[in-house]
Image 1 (tube, rainbow, N blue to C red):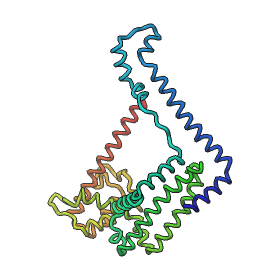
Image 2: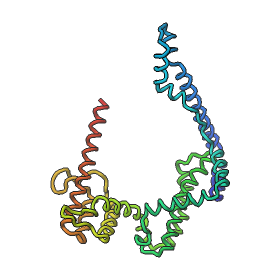
Image 3: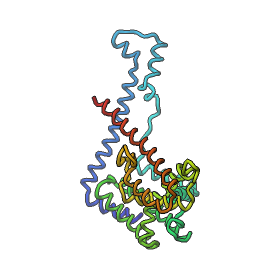
Image 4: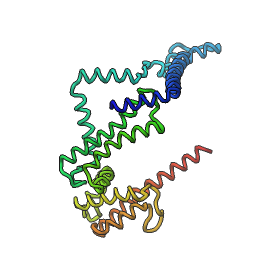
Length: 307
């Protein structure tokens, strides 16, 4: 991280004018937020009783109090006002918290790795590597994810908006170093499979919930081997064929199926039975039909609202 900071310091020094402008507008936006909040509070303080009094009308005290209490403005005005912390303040709080809770970092990292395992599945099986390599890959994937957050935060700390070419350049450089370490552990084919792993895991979950328990009306469930092969097939076609939600047709034998789904069905015919293929086709068609008509209904509502 120290190298990122040095790189950003040079970057900021080279663009002092842009930095000053960015800091000015960030401060202006903050002050504007305070002004707007103050204005909202002052406006909300002028409840209905005062408005009625200003116009010469009168209101019963109980009714006036009920009306004031029920307005959204009064509810917002009654809320405590919160200060937006600066990145320096957040950093100081985090350092104090970590000093007071030594186990925090380990717990946070363990939870991140837990979610990565859920997202990528068992990499030792997906990639055909040993357990130590699979664990090392998860650690590197976590480091890659953390790099995105670290670059984002450091750029904000230095007053540089994390957008555009500056952010992309720094992020690409830092993540590229992690990617190089990942590639050293894998063959080109294994690296490709690693990119597909989240899609494979997602496809497995879809199959397990929608198909594996009852693959057909006759109850011919998918075997674990069939589920694994089909999950890889689904993830691969989704990555290299336009999956989308737009059906090839809304009538006929391929009604509501997408190009990727048709490609998957064609390839899966090598290891699924005809009944399993028919069940898979029918399940996808049902889900796609619902998605299609929901989308059309939403468009109808939006068209009516524009009139």
